[in-house]
Image (cartoon, rainbow, N blue to C red; front, side):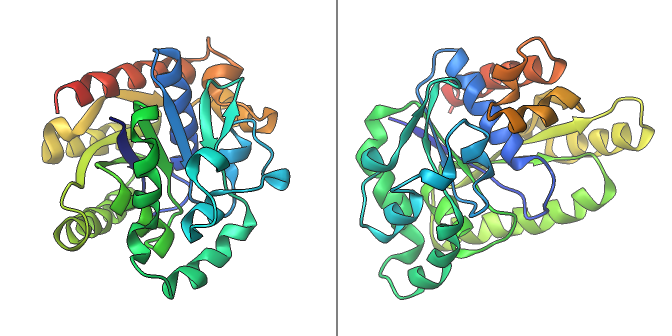
Length: 256
Protein backbone atom coordinates (compact mmCIF):
# COMPACT_ATOMS: atom_id res chain seq x y z
CA UNK A 1 0.00 0.00 0.00
CA UNK A 2 1.66 3.21 -1.18
CA UNK A 3 1.97 6.23 1.08
CA UNK A 4 1.13 9.36 -0.92
CA UNK A 5 2.78 12.67 0.00
CA UNK A 6 2.45 16.15 -1.48
CA UNK A 7 5.48 18.41 -1.46
CA UNK A 8 3.79 21.80 -1.25
CA UNK A 9 4.38 25.42 -0.35
CA UNK A 10 2.37 28.36 -1.64
CA UNK A 11 5.57 30.42 -1.75
CA UNK A 12 7.63 30.04 -4.93
CA UNK A 13 11.36 29.36 -5.08
CA UNK A 14 11.62 27.42 -1.82
CA UNK A 15 12.95 24.18 -3.31
CA UNK A 16 9.79 22.09 -3.77
CA UNK A 17 10.97 20.46 -6.99
CA UNK A 18 14.51 19.95 -5.71
CA UNK A 19 13.06 18.32 -2.60
CA UNK A 20 10.70 16.09 -4.61
CA UNK A 21 13.26 14.66 -7.05
CA UNK A 22 16.02 14.23 -4.47
CA UNK A 23 13.71 12.64 -1.90
CA UNK A 24 12.46 10.29 -4.64
CA UNK A 25 16.05 9.37 -5.57
CA UNK A 26 17.02 9.02 -1.91
CA UNK A 27 14.08 6.70 -1.21
CA UNK A 28 15.01 4.62 -4.26
CA UNK A 29 18.56 4.32 -2.95
CA UNK A 30 17.32 2.95 0.39
CA UNK A 31 15.26 0.27 -1.36
CA UNK A 32 11.82 1.87 -1.75
CA UNK A 33 9.59 1.66 -4.83
CA UNK A 34 8.78 5.25 -5.80
CA UNK A 35 6.46 7.07 -8.20
CA UNK A 36 7.08 10.79 -8.67
CA UNK A 37 4.06 12.77 -9.95
CA UNK A 38 4.75 16.15 -11.56
CA UNK A 39 1.70 18.44 -11.17
CA UNK A 40 3.48 21.61 -12.30
CA UNK A 41 2.96 22.64 -15.97
CA UNK A 42 6.58 23.82 -16.06
CA UNK A 43 7.60 20.16 -15.94
CA UNK A 44 10.81 20.85 -14.00
CA UNK A 45 10.53 17.71 -11.87
CA UNK A 46 10.06 15.67 -15.06
CA UNK A 47 13.18 17.08 -16.72
CA UNK A 48 15.12 16.91 -13.44
CA UNK A 49 14.40 13.18 -13.32
CA UNK A 50 15.90 12.58 -16.76
CA UNK A 51 12.60 12.35 -18.67
CA UNK A 52 12.18 14.62 -21.72
CA UNK A 53 8.88 16.48 -21.27
CA UNK A 54 8.89 17.62 -24.92
CA UNK A 55 8.39 14.10 -26.28
CA UNK A 56 6.24 12.79 -23.42
CA UNK A 57 2.86 11.30 -24.42
CA UNK A 58 0.70 10.54 -22.51
CA UNK A 59 1.32 12.70 -19.44
CA UNK A 60 -0.38 13.44 -16.13
CA UNK A 61 -2.67 15.72 -18.17
CA UNK A 62 -4.29 12.73 -19.89
CA UNK A 63 -4.45 10.89 -16.56
CA UNK A 64 -6.38 13.75 -14.95
CA UNK A 65 -8.82 13.91 -17.87
CA UNK A 66 -9.33 10.15 -17.73
CA UNK A 67 -8.01 9.34 -21.23
CA UNK A 68 -4.94 7.44 -19.97
CA UNK A 69 -4.09 5.25 -16.98
CA UNK A 70 -1.15 5.84 -14.62
CA UNK A 71 0.59 2.62 -15.75
CA UNK A 72 0.29 3.75 -19.36
CA UNK A 73 1.64 7.26 -18.70
CA UNK A 74 4.43 6.53 -16.18
CA UNK A 75 8.03 6.38 -17.42
CA UNK A 76 11.01 4.78 -15.75
CA UNK A 77 13.95 7.01 -14.90
CA UNK A 78 16.70 4.42 -15.04
CA UNK A 79 19.38 6.82 -13.85
CA UNK A 80 17.37 8.03 -10.84
CA UNK A 81 15.78 4.67 -10.00
CA UNK A 82 12.11 5.66 -9.80
CA UNK A 83 9.02 6.03 -12.01
CA UNK A 84 7.86 9.41 -13.29
CA UNK A 85 4.31 10.52 -14.10
CA UNK A 86 5.47 13.54 -16.04
CA UNK A 87 4.05 16.90 -17.06
CA UNK A 88 4.55 19.49 -19.77
CA UNK A 89 2.93 22.76 -20.83
CA UNK A 90 -0.29 20.96 -21.85
CA UNK A 91 -1.07 20.59 -18.15
CA UNK A 92 -1.80 24.33 -17.94
CA UNK A 93 -4.99 23.66 -19.91
CA UNK A 94 -6.19 21.13 -17.36
CA UNK A 95 -7.10 23.95 -14.96
CA UNK A 96 -9.90 25.03 -17.31
CA UNK A 97 -10.95 21.58 -18.50
CA UNK A 98 -11.20 20.07 -15.01
CA UNK A 99 -13.77 22.66 -13.91
CA UNK A 100 -16.52 21.00 -15.95
CA UNK A 101 -15.73 17.43 -14.84
CA UNK A 102 -17.35 15.46 -12.03
CA UNK A 103 -15.26 14.83 -8.93
CA UNK A 104 -12.76 17.36 -10.27
CA UNK A 105 -10.78 17.53 -7.00
CA UNK A 106 -10.42 13.75 -6.82
CA UNK A 107 -9.28 12.88 -10.35
CA UNK A 108 -5.68 12.17 -9.32
CA UNK A 109 -6.71 10.20 -6.23
CA UNK A 110 -8.97 7.94 -8.30
CA UNK A 111 -6.25 7.41 -10.93
CA UNK A 112 -3.58 6.52 -8.34
CA UNK A 113 -5.87 3.96 -6.70
CA UNK A 114 -5.06 1.53 -9.53
CA UNK A 115 -1.32 1.49 -8.68
CA UNK A 116 -1.47 1.53 -4.88
CA UNK A 117 0.14 -1.89 -4.68
CA UNK A 118 2.94 -1.07 -7.13
CA UNK A 119 4.79 1.47 -4.95
CA UNK A 120 5.88 2.17 -1.38
CA UNK A 121 5.88 5.96 -1.87
CA UNK A 122 4.11 8.34 -4.25
CA UNK A 123 5.55 11.89 -4.18
CA UNK A 124 3.58 14.73 -5.77
CA UNK A 125 5.34 17.93 -6.83
CA UNK A 126 2.74 20.72 -6.59
CA UNK A 127 2.72 24.16 -8.26
CA UNK A 128 3.31 27.20 -5.99
CA UNK A 129 -0.35 28.19 -5.70
CA UNK A 130 -3.57 26.75 -4.33
CA UNK A 131 -4.90 25.87 -7.80
CA UNK A 132 -7.14 23.00 -8.90
CA UNK A 133 -3.96 21.05 -9.69
CA UNK A 134 -2.61 21.54 -6.16
CA UNK A 135 -6.05 20.65 -4.80
CA UNK A 136 -5.92 17.36 -6.71
CA UNK A 137 -2.55 16.66 -5.11
CA UNK A 138 -3.83 17.44 -1.61
CA UNK A 139 -6.95 15.33 -2.10
CA UNK A 140 -4.86 12.36 -3.26
CA UNK A 141 -2.33 12.55 -0.41
CA UNK A 142 -2.05 11.10 3.07
CA UNK A 143 0.14 13.98 4.13
CA UNK A 144 2.01 17.13 3.20
CA UNK A 145 5.76 17.74 3.37
CA UNK A 146 6.58 21.44 3.45
CA UNK A 147 10.07 22.52 2.34
CA UNK A 148 10.89 25.97 3.65
CA UNK A 149 13.74 28.37 4.01
CA UNK A 150 14.40 29.73 7.48
CA UNK A 151 13.51 33.33 6.64
CA UNK A 152 10.89 35.73 7.96
CA UNK A 153 8.61 35.79 4.88
CA UNK A 154 8.62 31.99 4.80
CA UNK A 155 6.95 31.97 8.22
CA UNK A 156 4.14 34.18 6.90
CA UNK A 157 3.53 31.88 3.93
CA UNK A 158 3.56 28.84 6.21
CA UNK A 159 0.52 30.02 8.17
CA UNK A 160 -1.46 30.33 4.91
CA UNK A 161 -0.47 26.81 3.87
CA UNK A 162 -1.40 25.32 7.25
CA UNK A 163 -4.84 26.94 6.98
CA UNK A 164 -5.26 25.51 3.46
CA UNK A 165 -4.35 22.02 4.72
CA UNK A 166 -6.94 22.36 7.51
CA UNK A 167 -9.63 23.39 5.02
CA UNK A 168 -8.89 20.49 2.67
CA UNK A 169 -8.85 18.10 5.65
CA UNK A 170 -12.24 19.38 6.85
CA UNK A 171 -14.00 19.44 3.48
CA UNK A 172 -12.35 17.10 0.98
CA UNK A 173 -9.79 14.67 2.45
CA UNK A 174 -10.09 13.48 6.03
CA UNK A 175 -6.80 11.54 5.73
CA UNK A 176 -4.72 14.64 5.02
CA UNK A 177 -2.30 15.83 7.68
CA UNK A 178 0.85 17.89 7.96
CA UNK A 179 3.66 15.33 8.01
CA UNK A 180 6.52 17.71 8.62
CA UNK A 181 8.53 20.80 7.80
CA UNK A 182 11.85 20.36 6.00
CA UNK A 183 14.42 23.12 6.46
CA UNK A 184 16.12 23.62 3.09
CA UNK A 185 18.90 25.87 1.72
CA UNK A 186 20.04 26.22 5.32
CA UNK A 187 23.18 28.19 6.17
CA UNK A 188 24.13 27.81 9.83
CA UNK A 189 26.40 30.87 9.60
CA UNK A 190 23.38 33.19 9.26
CA UNK A 191 22.02 34.14 12.67
CA UNK A 192 18.50 34.85 11.36
CA UNK A 193 18.22 31.36 9.89
CA UNK A 194 19.24 29.83 13.23
CA UNK A 195 16.63 31.98 15.01
CA UNK A 196 13.83 31.06 12.59
CA UNK A 197 14.83 27.40 12.85
CA UNK A 198 14.49 27.56 16.64
CA UNK A 199 11.11 29.30 16.29
CA UNK A 200 9.90 26.51 14.02
CA UNK A 201 11.00 23.81 16.46
CA UNK A 202 9.43 25.72 19.34
CA UNK A 203 6.07 26.08 17.60
CA UNK A 204 5.77 22.84 15.59
CA UNK A 205 7.83 20.47 17.79
CA UNK A 206 8.32 17.04 16.25
CA UNK A 207 6.61 18.20 13.03
CA UNK A 208 10.01 19.68 12.11
CA UNK A 209 12.17 17.00 10.51
CA UNK A 210 15.50 16.32 12.20
CA UNK A 211 17.28 16.39 8.85
CA UNK A 212 18.40 19.80 7.57
CA UNK A 213 19.27 20.32 3.88
CA UNK A 214 22.25 22.68 3.59
CA UNK A 215 22.66 25.28 0.86
CA UNK A 216 24.64 23.36 -1.77
CA UNK A 217 25.72 24.35 -5.28
CA UNK A 218 25.83 20.74 -6.53
CA UNK A 219 22.09 20.37 -5.92
CA UNK A 220 21.52 23.51 -8.00
CA UNK A 221 23.74 22.23 -10.85
CA UNK A 222 22.15 18.77 -11.09
CA UNK A 223 18.92 19.68 -13.01
CA UNK A 224 20.95 20.98 -15.98
CA UNK A 225 22.23 17.40 -16.36
CA UNK A 226 18.73 15.91 -16.06
CA UNK A 227 19.54 14.21 -12.76
CA UNK A 228 18.64 14.56 -9.08
CA UNK A 229 21.58 15.83 -7.02
CA UNK A 230 21.60 12.53 -5.09
CA UNK A 231 22.57 10.77 -8.36
CA UNK A 232 24.60 13.59 -9.96
CA UNK A 233 27.03 13.90 -7.05
CA UNK A 234 26.38 11.38 -4.24
CA UNK A 235 29.31 12.75 -2.22
CA UNK A 236 27.93 16.32 -1.99
CA UNK A 237 26.71 17.52 1.41
CA UNK A 238 23.22 18.22 0.05
CA UNK A 239 22.98 14.77 -1.56
CA UNK A 240 23.98 13.01 1.65
CA UNK A 241 21.42 15.10 3.56
CA UNK A 242 18.63 14.00 1.20
CA UNK A 243 19.53 10.33 1.64
CA UNK A 244 19.39 10.91 5.42
CA UNK A 245 16.01 12.58 4.91
CA UNK A 246 14.79 9.56 2.94
CA UNK A 247 15.74 7.27 5.82
CA UNK A 248 13.95 9.60 8.26
CA UNK A 249 10.83 9.51 6.06
CA UNK A 250 10.82 5.70 6.01
CA UNK A 251 11.14 5.61 9.80
CA UNK A 252 8.38 8.21 10.24
CA UNK A 253 6.00 6.33 7.92
CA UNK A 254 6.59 3.13 9.88
CA UNK A 255 5.42 4.97 13.03
CA UNK A 256 2.09 6.01 11.49
